[in-house]
Length: 105
Image (tube, rainbow, N blue to C red; front, side, top):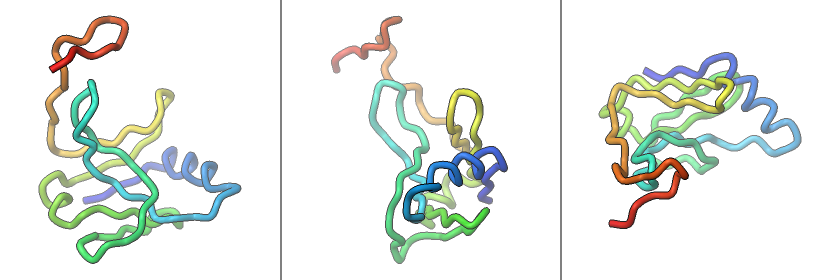
């Protein structure tokens, strides 16, 4: 239902090396040129969250959201963090140019 790879755990360990450890929320970022996608942010636990403790870190996901998108997998590759789930989100703006600038709607 919720997985964090060893490579992601190593990166998160490195991130918190000189910081106070805080819960990590996984949620849907709906905006931006690339379209909606899963992201991570530091946050506080809410009553509606499911909590997963993996590698000594606490991950939070809204319970209803998790039921819609499970399973969630957090990985770290050469290109950075990769968060995958069972839902395919739309790709965002179809008028983006090669410069990465997005069209106006």
